[in-house]
Image (cartoon, rainbow over all chains, first blue to last red):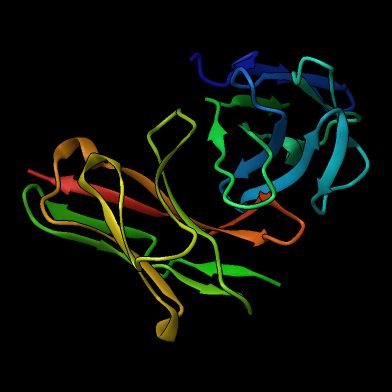
Length: 114
Length: 116
Protein backbone atom coordinates (compact mmCIF):
# COMPACT_ATOMS: atom_id res chain seq x y z
CA UNK A 1 0.00 0.00 0.00
CA UNK A 2 1.18 3.49 -0.72
CA UNK A 3 1.82 5.64 2.32
CA UNK A 4 0.36 8.99 3.27
CA UNK A 5 1.23 11.65 0.74
CA UNK A 6 1.25 15.37 1.26
CA UNK A 7 1.49 18.13 -1.31
CA UNK A 8 3.22 20.36 -1.72
CA UNK A 9 6.30 19.46 0.29
CA UNK A 10 7.49 23.05 0.56
CA UNK A 11 5.70 26.37 0.42
CA UNK A 12 6.76 29.96 0.83
CA UNK A 13 4.08 32.56 1.42
CA UNK A 14 3.94 36.13 2.70
CA UNK A 15 1.99 37.49 5.62
CA UNK A 16 -1.69 38.00 4.93
CA UNK A 17 -1.90 35.39 2.20
CA UNK A 18 -3.77 32.15 2.51
CA UNK A 19 -2.57 28.63 1.82
CA UNK A 20 -4.08 25.21 1.16
CA UNK A 21 -2.30 21.98 1.97
CA UNK A 22 -3.37 18.59 0.73
CA UNK A 23 -3.19 15.11 2.24
CA UNK A 24 -3.97 11.77 0.62
CA UNK A 25 -4.42 9.01 3.21
CA UNK A 26 -3.54 5.37 2.95
CA UNK A 27 -6.09 3.51 0.87
CA UNK A 28 -8.98 2.35 3.06
CA UNK A 29 -8.27 4.81 5.86
CA UNK A 30 -11.20 7.04 6.72
CA UNK A 31 -9.64 9.28 9.34
CA UNK A 32 -7.22 12.12 8.62
CA UNK A 33 -5.63 14.19 11.36
CA UNK A 34 -3.49 17.29 11.03
CA UNK A 35 -0.68 18.41 13.30
CA UNK A 36 1.51 21.49 13.43
CA UNK A 37 5.15 21.08 14.41
CA UNK A 38 7.25 24.07 15.46
CA UNK A 39 10.51 24.32 17.43
CA UNK A 40 8.80 26.35 20.15
CA UNK A 41 5.48 24.55 20.59
CA UNK A 42 6.39 21.09 19.40
CA UNK A 43 3.74 18.85 17.88
CA UNK A 44 0.21 20.12 18.31
CA UNK A 45 -3.04 18.59 17.15
CA UNK A 46 -5.06 20.76 14.78
CA UNK A 47 -8.12 18.69 13.86
CA UNK A 48 -9.33 15.31 12.70
CA UNK A 49 -11.78 14.42 9.97
CA UNK A 50 -13.66 11.18 9.66
CA UNK A 51 -16.13 10.44 6.88
CA UNK A 52 -16.11 14.08 5.78
CA UNK A 53 -16.96 15.37 9.28
CA UNK A 54 -14.70 17.14 11.72
CA UNK A 55 -14.66 14.84 14.72
CA UNK A 56 -11.93 16.34 16.91
CA UNK A 57 -10.50 19.82 17.13
CA UNK A 58 -7.42 21.27 18.77
CA UNK A 59 -6.90 24.69 20.22
CA UNK A 60 -6.15 26.76 17.14
CA UNK A 61 -7.78 29.96 15.87
CA UNK A 62 -10.48 29.90 13.23
CA UNK A 63 -7.94 30.88 10.57
CA UNK A 64 -7.09 27.20 10.50
CA UNK A 65 -9.73 25.11 8.80
CA UNK A 66 -9.99 21.87 6.96
CA UNK A 67 -12.22 19.58 5.05
CA UNK A 68 -12.39 16.01 3.88
CA UNK A 69 -13.68 14.71 0.62
CA UNK A 70 -15.66 11.56 -0.10
CA UNK A 71 -12.48 9.73 -1.12
CA UNK A 72 -11.00 10.58 2.32
CA UNK A 73 -8.49 13.04 0.92
CA UNK A 74 -8.20 16.08 3.12
CA UNK A 75 -7.20 19.68 2.73
CA UNK A 76 -6.14 22.16 5.33
CA UNK A 77 -6.45 25.89 4.83
CA UNK A 78 -4.78 28.70 6.70
CA UNK A 79 -6.05 32.20 6.00
CA UNK A 80 -4.40 35.54 6.77
CA UNK A 81 -1.03 33.97 7.35
CA UNK A 82 1.12 35.16 10.22
CA UNK A 83 4.86 34.73 10.72
CA UNK A 84 4.12 32.31 13.55
CA UNK A 85 2.36 29.96 11.16
CA UNK A 86 5.73 28.91 9.77
CA UNK A 87 5.90 25.24 10.63
CA UNK A 88 5.97 21.69 9.43
CA UNK A 89 2.38 20.54 8.91
CA UNK A 90 1.94 16.81 9.28
CA UNK A 91 -0.98 14.77 8.18
CA UNK A 92 -1.77 11.37 9.64
CA UNK A 93 -4.24 8.77 8.47
CA UNK A 94 -5.84 5.88 10.28
CA UNK A 95 -8.80 3.54 10.07
CA UNK A 96 -10.57 5.74 12.57
CA UNK A 97 -11.45 2.98 15.02
CA UNK A 98 -12.64 4.15 18.43
CA UNK A 99 -10.18 1.87 20.20
CA UNK A 100 -6.76 0.65 19.26
CA UNK A 101 -6.33 2.93 16.28
CA UNK A 102 -2.90 3.62 14.85
CA UNK A 103 -1.90 6.70 12.91
CA UNK A 104 0.46 6.75 9.97
CA UNK A 105 2.15 10.04 9.21
CA UNK A 106 3.05 11.66 5.94
CA UNK A 107 6.35 13.47 5.28
CA UNK A 108 4.83 16.87 5.99
CA UNK A 109 4.55 20.20 4.24
CA UNK A 110 7.11 22.79 5.27
CA UNK A 111 5.42 26.22 5.26
CA UNK A 112 7.52 29.34 5.50
CA UNK A 113 5.78 32.66 6.00
CA UNK A 114 7.81 35.76 5.15
CA UNK B 1 -5.64 17.31 30.74
CA UNK B 2 -3.36 14.64 29.49
CA UNK B 3 0.32 15.48 29.20
CA UNK B 4 3.57 13.79 28.30
CA UNK B 5 6.99 14.69 29.64
CA UNK B 6 10.28 13.76 28.04
CA UNK B 7 12.84 15.09 30.48
CA UNK B 8 15.87 14.69 28.22
CA UNK B 9 16.16 17.15 25.33
CA UNK B 10 19.37 15.60 23.98
CA UNK B 11 21.08 12.29 24.62
CA UNK B 12 24.41 11.15 23.20
CA UNK B 13 25.15 7.45 23.10
CA UNK B 14 28.14 5.60 21.70
CA UNK B 15 27.44 3.23 18.86
CA UNK B 16 26.87 -0.24 20.27
CA UNK B 17 25.90 1.02 23.71
CA UNK B 18 22.46 0.58 25.21
CA UNK B 19 19.83 3.28 25.13
CA UNK B 20 16.96 4.33 27.36
CA UNK B 21 14.74 7.30 26.59
CA UNK B 22 12.43 8.45 29.34
CA UNK B 23 8.75 9.26 29.05
CA UNK B 24 6.31 10.15 31.81
CA UNK B 25 2.61 10.68 31.24
CA UNK B 26 -0.20 12.26 33.13
CA UNK B 27 -3.53 10.58 32.57
CA UNK B 28 -6.23 9.44 34.95
CA UNK B 29 -7.33 6.24 33.28
CA UNK B 30 -5.45 3.54 31.42
CA UNK B 31 -3.28 5.37 28.91
CA UNK B 32 -2.73 4.43 25.32
CA UNK B 33 0.92 5.17 24.64
CA UNK B 34 3.08 5.43 21.57
CA UNK B 35 6.68 6.03 20.60
CA UNK B 36 7.45 7.67 17.26
CA UNK B 37 10.76 8.44 15.56
CA UNK B 38 11.41 11.35 13.23
CA UNK B 39 14.48 11.59 11.01
CA UNK B 40 15.51 15.03 9.72
CA UNK B 41 13.07 16.37 7.17
CA UNK B 42 10.77 13.39 7.55
CA UNK B 43 7.43 12.59 9.07
CA UNK B 44 6.88 10.39 12.09
CA UNK B 45 7.28 6.65 12.07
CA UNK B 46 5.59 4.51 14.71
CA UNK B 47 8.08 2.41 16.67
CA UNK B 48 5.67 0.73 19.08
CA UNK B 49 2.45 1.15 20.98
CA UNK B 50 0.86 0.06 24.23
CA UNK B 51 -2.86 -0.43 24.53
CA UNK B 52 -3.23 -3.14 27.17
CA UNK B 53 -1.87 -6.52 28.22
CA UNK B 54 1.82 -7.29 28.51
CA UNK B 55 3.61 -4.26 29.87
CA UNK B 56 6.78 -4.98 27.87
CA UNK B 57 6.12 -4.04 24.27
CA UNK B 58 8.31 -4.97 21.32
CA UNK B 59 8.58 -2.67 18.35
CA UNK B 60 10.39 -2.27 15.10
CA UNK B 61 14.12 -1.73 14.62
CA UNK B 62 14.94 -3.62 17.83
CA UNK B 63 13.21 -1.16 20.17
CA UNK B 64 11.13 -2.10 23.19
CA UNK B 65 9.29 -0.12 25.85
CA UNK B 66 8.00 -0.95 29.29
CA UNK B 67 4.80 0.45 30.72
CA UNK B 68 5.00 1.05 34.48
CA UNK B 69 1.72 2.29 35.89
CA UNK B 70 3.17 2.90 39.37
CA UNK B 71 5.73 5.30 37.90
CA UNK B 72 3.53 6.70 35.13
CA UNK B 73 6.32 5.88 32.73
CA UNK B 74 6.75 4.36 29.31
CA UNK B 75 10.50 4.31 28.69
CA UNK B 76 11.96 3.30 25.35
CA UNK B 77 14.98 0.99 25.26
CA UNK B 78 17.36 -0.54 22.78
CA UNK B 79 20.20 -2.89 23.77
CA UNK B 80 22.67 -1.79 21.09
CA UNK B 81 22.41 1.51 19.24
CA UNK B 82 23.35 1.88 15.57
CA UNK B 83 24.45 5.11 13.92
CA UNK B 84 21.24 5.05 11.87
CA UNK B 85 19.21 5.42 15.08
CA UNK B 86 20.24 9.07 15.34
CA UNK B 87 16.95 10.95 15.13
CA UNK B 88 14.34 12.61 17.29
CA UNK B 89 12.07 10.43 19.37
CA UNK B 90 8.59 11.38 20.52
CA UNK B 91 6.44 9.79 23.16
CA UNK B 92 2.69 10.33 22.77
CA UNK B 93 -0.57 9.50 24.51
CA UNK B 94 -4.01 9.24 22.95
CA UNK B 95 -5.73 12.14 24.61
CA UNK B 96 -9.10 10.57 25.23
CA UNK B 97 -9.71 7.00 24.09
CA UNK B 98 -13.41 7.40 24.91
CA UNK B 99 -13.92 10.02 22.24
CA UNK B 100 -11.29 9.04 19.77
CA UNK B 101 -7.85 7.65 19.40
CA UNK B 102 -6.87 10.14 16.82
CA UNK B 103 -5.95 13.12 18.98
CA UNK B 104 -2.44 12.48 20.15
CA UNK B 105 -0.66 14.54 22.79
CA UNK B 106 3.07 14.52 22.20
CA UNK B 107 6.05 15.08 24.42
CA UNK B 108 8.65 17.63 23.42
CA UNK B 109 10.94 15.00 21.99
CA UNK B 110 14.43 13.69 22.70
CA UNK B 111 17.13 14.13 20.12
CA UNK B 112 19.44 11.13 20.01
CA UNK B 113 23.01 11.62 18.86
CA UNK B 114 25.16 8.56 18.20
CA UNK B 115 28.90 8.91 18.54
CA UNK B 116 31.33 6.57 16.77
